[in-house]
Length: 195
Image (cartoon, rainbow, N blue to C red; front, side):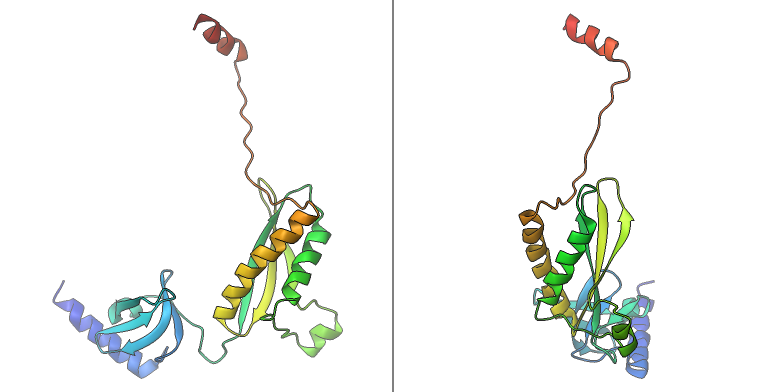
């Protein structure tokens, strides 16, 4: 088994050279865990630099068997899907308006609507209700940025500004509630009296 691993890494490296799913300098995500900028591609392994400036050495056989997300392939623009939760008592229209206003005021937001979408008055920042949860309603904002890095900065900034706006007008962010029901209260009372 171990004898075949170096050979499979070399085969994987050859496929990377032939098909070029990414190049040095591209921002990629391999599977669900490893994400960063490609620094080196050899026949045996690929080196990526993550956002903490650490180097991750990934065997090419592993890369060949994983889904690769390449943020630099053809189009760097990113549609960011950002979730916000509100309680059932909160005003949904007001919450949506706050999210849209906060996003449109951010310097990284881009309006990539087509002419037809603009004529149909589709909002530059679309916000939709996607879930009725146990504790509240989940809203999802669809926001374009030019790069993935800008999208991450936008997301963290919006979490801050939207929370401040929600607090100012008492829109509650939901948290789990638990209700405990005792089926046999008489039995519990007797146990407490005897203690």
